[in-house]
Image (cartoon, helix red, strand yellow):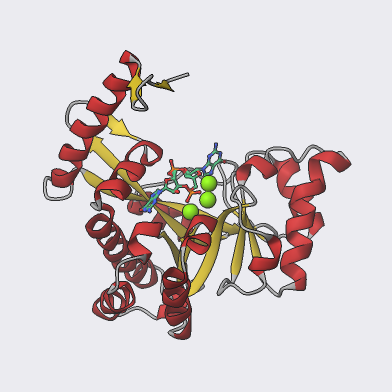
Length: 278
Ligand code: C2E
Ligand code: MG
Ligand code: MG
Ligand code: MG
């Protein structure tokens, strides 16, 4: 246990947690400046058509190269950015990078299929009153078609409050598509899903990892795919690491996926090479 209630109602923290908190506070300060100092960069992981194995889209994934601590995982720094609000400016920066890159992908491979791009959006960003306007402004500036953008949100956004849902609805009216990320790991009820402004369910990689040819291993993934079919949503499988997983997903009716089997998140230049006809 990292903490316990003190006898006077306040919380006593163990030394390890105090260290963690101090480290987080220091990281939060550093993160304020990371963007201006050029420490952030965006990688692109292909989403492939599971039948052809060709990339049809990219997910933009943020990286932070810290001058002292080295590469820090977004799993570690996004929650900090979310707490301090830095995620608002960082998130818009990622969107701008991703859309500029999308335009570059088109121009570098004009004969290829139109690529789509996915950008993660955090709950804090959706609570900004100007979020819809801000996103549309970045899209217009980049000169891309909003129908080529997918915004990935987690169930937390949707359980959170009505404001987030209204914003997603407005974005959708402009042609942007919404994906429910890490689907199945959150706590929203299934009934809720039928009323959400969502186009795509991303099957969390913890379920993909369970695919092993047994009925038990397949149960959750199969249920999500069937649910999506009934609701006319698309599915994307995350974290595909083996060709057996890919084969099971295809057999179950999921036709888009991403994972280390195909490619890790890549710098834009390497991603472009994947787009060249083979
Ligand atoms: P996510 O949106 O669910 O992104 C997928 C994560 O799964 C990525 O981790 C990706 O590198 C990893 N992944 C992809 N294929 C495989 C695989 O085959 N095996 C395994 N084990 N992992 C795989 P990453 O890049 O570390 O990002 C972690 C999370 O951080 C993301 O999860 C997302 O929630 C958040 N994140 C990343 N970039 C941004 C951003 O720009 N904005 C916001 N708000 N969140 C971000
Ligand atoms: Mg995502
Ligand atoms: Mg995900
Ligand atoms: Mg995930």
